[in-house]
Length: 504
Ligand code: C2O
Ligand code: CU
Image 1 (tube, rainbow, N blue to C red):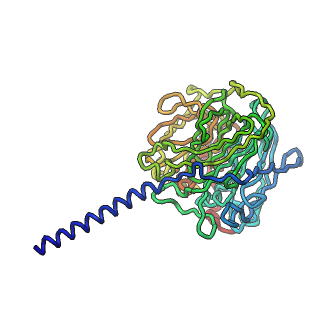
Image 2: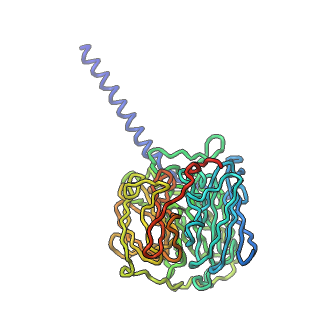
Image 3: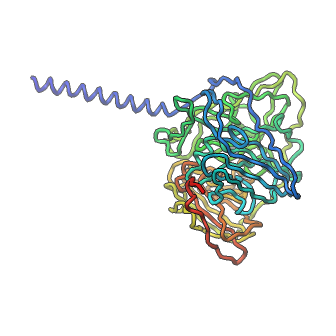
């Protein structure tokens, strides 16, 4: 009798525990989904990064960038931040194809950083990767000739092991390339008026209003924020005064992948990707951008209306746990407010620019890249290892696959590539133009084709890596040097005592 009662009690307790556990599981599962749909108060005017002043000095267009500490209002009081020439983010650099540019980078922080020109075709010595350390109080003045199609590029630190932290604190900005031959006058092009930078970054704050970069539960990709800042503005609106507005979208986030669309599902024209305009405008209602990727879109507005740019849930191609990496989230990003009367703007032409296609037959080298376990081809980043050495002016095909079901991407320095195939088929329109960063859903093989023109330097490497910054910092990166035809890779001379933010 007594035994039965004890067993019954145990049974009830076990049942209760199971219920609690299952409840906790369900709660945890659901708690991994963030939605701010229709919940953001768009009360702050969108900040537009100023165009960086420049001057001509012995035939060079010279810019100054100073990395400095400051504070910024993200709606959580004064949050400590870093910025270039200001408290957060940096000015927009702008140069024309054919110009020789020089950027005087000064570091007024109390630790070492670097500045990398993401998407730029330039000599490795000017690239600003993890070898080009700028110590506190020091400066660095790379110079190069801008020689690539009109595009929306960007700049950010690239300090090995600490890129995530430096970008998250606010060090990033745009670098726009102009080129009459590869731009289209009919597209909106008045900076800050109908041609507007949209740097999207998710942020998380601790109780004291400081930036919190702790990774989410089971995220595996590092920090995912529940607050979206655009150009540093939280809850931003943009006053639109023209019938059409061009948004230059940059996913400047550490880890989050966005699938941009509008709350009313209106269509828009995708006109450009990482390395320039597309050959023809693509009419769509969504554009997915992983960290580091850019898209130029043109949105048509009616007088007096409002439209909300939103990031929708998406299939990250990483299996049922995509929600732990933000795949199930809905985030309201930016409100467009059209004035009562709008200045006319021409329709988006369907044909945009000529893109010379790289052909399979041009390639002299094929290389496989398997991204898995914070490594590429089972190797982790080492500052002095050169993984391979393409010859100057040669064309190569890189066969790339994400093999571990976590969100990964591949970014290649120096070049803009074309996607030859995605899973054996021709790429979709959004991958048909110049790219320097590509999102890799699990187990989908991409063939990327690229030419290593112009710059050879056997001793100074370019990077290739996953642009999920937590993965990059963890070692999911490698190095290549471009050698002259018939040349051999040299030796990387790295000041390794400086490798982790050390001091001179
Ligand atoms: Cu945007 Cu190697 O980086
Ligand atoms: Cu990755």
